[in-house]
Image 1: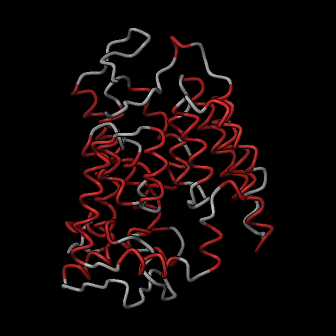
Image 2: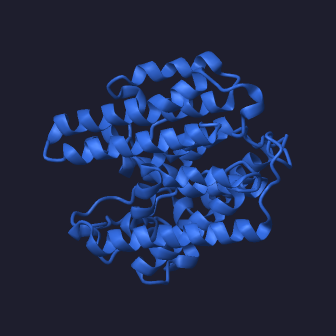
Length: 333
C-alpha cells in the first residue's frame, strides 16, 4: 500500500523540485567519487574504484567469454578472482566500453540521482540519508547501496537487486515486492542460459580468501552484534526486519552497505541524529587507523555496531507515535 501525501499533511514536492534535488545530489556524489580517485589511496587513483570488478566482467561478456571467472583479475595491485556475480556485470554492460574512471563517475551520478528522485516522491527530508558517512563511502567506492535504497518501490526496481544479491535480500525483507521477485528470477534463469555454472564459479572464487570471507560475515559476528537480534521483538515493523536482515545476512561490515539503515529513522531529528552518529563512527575509525590486524577490525566493527546499527535498533524498539511515521515502505503485491 502506498500513500500519495506525507502523513503530516505536507504536500509532496513537485517534479521540478525533485529533479533539481536529484541533479544536485548526483553532482555531489560525482565530486566525492572524483576526489577519491584523484587524491585517495594510490591504488584507486584514475580507476573505477570498486566498480572495476563488474566492469571487467562486463568487458569479458562483450568479448564473448562464457566463463568470466576463468581468469584472475587485478583490481588494484594483486590478482584476485572476480568477486561479483555475473548479474552485476550485466547491469553495467552499457558502461563497459568507457574508460574505467568515467564509467565509475557516470555510475555514481546516475544511481544517486535516480535514488534521490524516487525517495522524494513524498517529502524532501528523505534525502538526509545522503548526509551520512555511509553515503560518502558508497560514493567514494562506487558502491550499489544508494541505488538499492529504492528497491521494491516498483516491480522493475527489484531487478536492481541483481547487482548485489545479498544486499538485495536485505531490502526484500524491508520492502517485499513479489511481482518484482518473479521478474528477478526470470532474469537469473536467462543468465544461466549464457553460463550455467556461473553461480558456483562465483561463489568458489568469492570464498577462496579467508580474509574476504571474514570481512563479509556481517554484524552478527562483530563485537556486540548479537544484541542487534533484539530487532526481532518488533518483527511486524518493516524497519525491524531491515535491521535484523542486515545483521544476519552476510555483507561487508564497513560503511557503505550500512547506508540501508538510514531508512529506519522516521523523523527529521532522528535522521540527523543517525547521520551524525555515523560520522562519529567514521571519525573513530579514522583516529585508530594506525592499528593493525585484529585490533583495527575490533575498533571498526564495534564502532559500526554501536554508532550505526545501534541508533537504528533504538529507533525500532522506541518508535515515535504513529502519526509521525514517514519511513513506511511501499509494499508490492
